[in-house]
Length: 288
Ligand code: AMP
Image 1 (cartoon, rainbow, N blue to C red):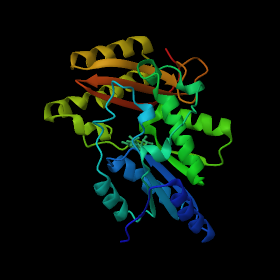
Image 2: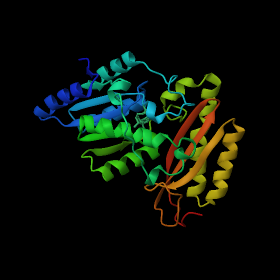
Image 3: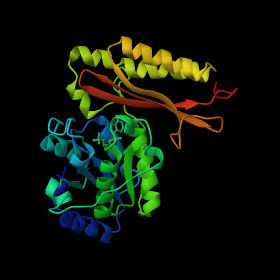
């Protein structure tokens, strides 16, 4: 096994990528905030099917955290992350400092629209603009052929697809399915915050999604099913931010014209905020 080359600057990252390009290799970027788990590693494995040179970026981006959120507490373990990536023979790890990404005098922002409306934006209005500026900078730094994103953050994936198309960034955005624990809980770096009790309770999130989807697909009225799901989560000890059925491509509330839908949820268990989503097939009779 060869340890991935660690790039701390954009200049060094570009040098590594230029060498790979000169060797005829296709480049994949996998943006992450570190504290890697099997969900992240699945993105790396999927990238390997399309690229000979994989760069995983690890950057906890201050611009996407509100002052009240967990930026300082967010789990960081670069050495363990690099070892996991070494096992997958990843070629490069981009590990920039905050000053490298946001140099002195940084004064530029992005305003993303379309699929950023609603859902996460209601409680985290800063999030998508902050995410977009850093993802745009990462894409411009690496100019990869493909970049991998998880469906776990479904709204984020939709926003990235939108601004990459709008800005004409020459990278293909590839979405990958959510990797789950044995009890169905979507893997997340933030699951490390859950104590044993909360960890058991957290499995209610995918259970509620699955039950609600079965009922919606059987033709039950959507509003009643969502109300029941919200009540179940609340009784289980969650503070629910949203449980919504949205058009799978626009993320607007599902309407008669929506062919595919997505059921999306965000709920807090104590201080830990969990998000998840699953695909919903339109009932033969249409959305009730
Ligand atoms: P994060 O480090 O949480 O910012 O996530 C980095 C990337 O990994 C994002 O594209 C996420 O959607 C993706 N990801 C996170 N958790 C999972 C999971 N359980 N399954 C698949 N992809 C994931």
